[in-house]
Image (tube, rainbow, N blue to C red; front, side):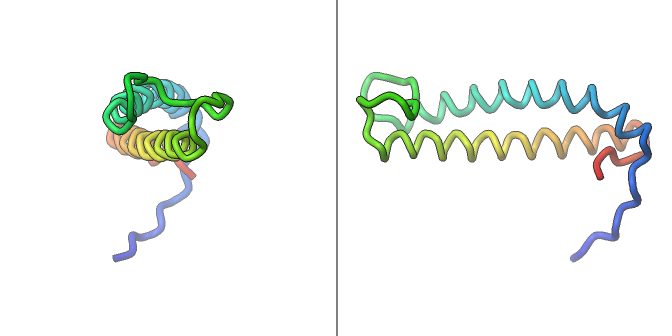
Length: 100
């Protein structure tokens, strides 16, 4: 089912939403980081709970790529969730959708 096209947000709605967007982005980044660290602890092998970085040669390429892909997926999912819910909350308070 396709949703009806939303009207264009006003300039004031976009400006008012900026601080909300910034704060929610920071909170989302922190939350995504915590989630990723917990997930990595469960899927990684060995005692080292820290995910490998691309420049750490002691890790296999597959493990480094898995960490990067998993981190990217978690960050993208949390970002989408936070932005969407923030926009819905903003709309409930102001009556306007902040996005374009």
